Length: 66
Length: 302
Image (cartoon, rainbow over all chains, first blue to last red; front, side, top):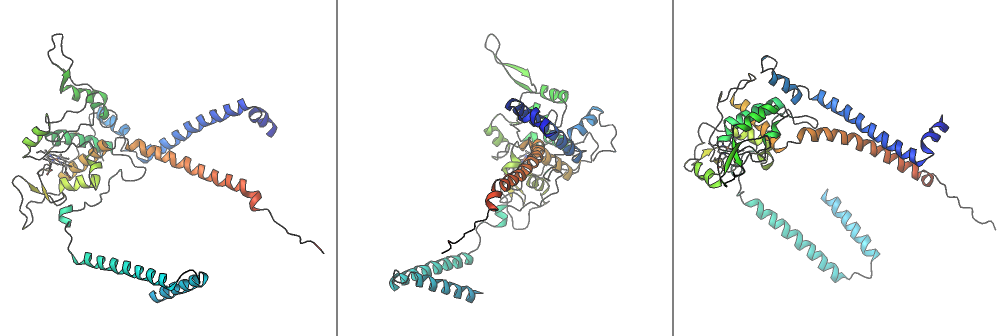
């Protein structure tokens, strides 16, 4: 197991650097997704994405306004 | 408490003087003591004198401090209420825009914040902007585009002052950042006009009384009254509702990056916290051999 990881990643600098770059990219995407979905859930009801459908519907259903 | 402090000082002084016995002559000591006493007495005298006089800048001159309101965007991770921004823009357009400009906001800034692309385009097209001159060099006009900035009500400062009895209605783009109390102040100012100025207050002609405005005498009269505008989403347009919405809107114009800033702040906090713990681990790792080594001395045996 460890030897496998060593041979695959750490042995050569090229693979090591490539791993660093790739995992940075994936980490950033994952963190961004997680934080954004938490942030938008937390602020649900106040966002543009909540307002836009109401505008497009011409504010017909007036009871669910905050 | 003071006697304890005093004896500690004396003790300190004594041990100091024993350490440096021969160097400090008693004359030097006297001079130092005199200087300390003179400084202390002068400071006490100045403080006493200061306490005897009344404040020249009274609370009325500073303006009343606005109360802190419970804005829905107050928290560290709370976004603006975009429905409120939209209503606030309507209040700005229908009320404040008669006197106040909003120079730093372009029509495109509203897109995806409070208005759709086509709405913002339609609003921009209602205004005429200078176009390139035609082939004979005559100035031309064109309808507004998304990239144009929202036009102000007056051609220049002189025109603005002439229309407002010499007072200049400030540009509102950054007003929330430009005033102590920020949005709280704007809300308090707009809703803070009493029916009559308090007894004993005389105002210049054309001025109005508002306790939140420094000095109390403001050239802008009360502008918000119940049901002045009609909200498309059915929200009752009370004075305080309109003041809340326009304050939220002006807060957005001052900080258009607000929502994104807080989102990135959350990300930054997570990453920085993780890096902090990594740095603690690395420090412990690097120092462990030094911290745990043991120095043993074996005295030579005779």
